[in-house]
Image (cartoon, rainbow, N blue to C red; front, side, top):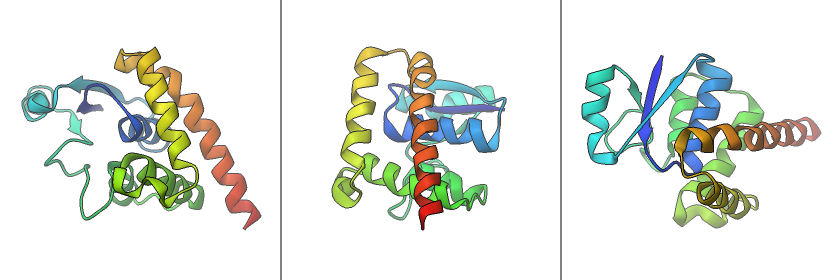
Length: 144
């Protein structure tokens, strides 16, 4: 399937493709467009839009797009739910200090954006970070 989000990826727009690739659609193709072109590109390509204003898989009721994906695809793995708390806090500025790891994840995302301004390259480089963070979350959940 094709998936579409806003260009210039950051926390939620990296975490969502990671989640999609690892748990929803392992053959996902990601498209990037300016915010004002999301609806048009979705209509032209049939891509599923996420993390953009007004789309189903976006921010709603205080939840970030990563959380919207978890709910839509009924992903209930405890480690993913722990990761969702980190992603939410790192992505929603007002909630930045609600998780002790959020500032670090936000800083890492900013640094990768500076090093890799191409969105596809940015995702490729950051996915191992999210793999490692998910592994850490699995360990934390196992510890209880």
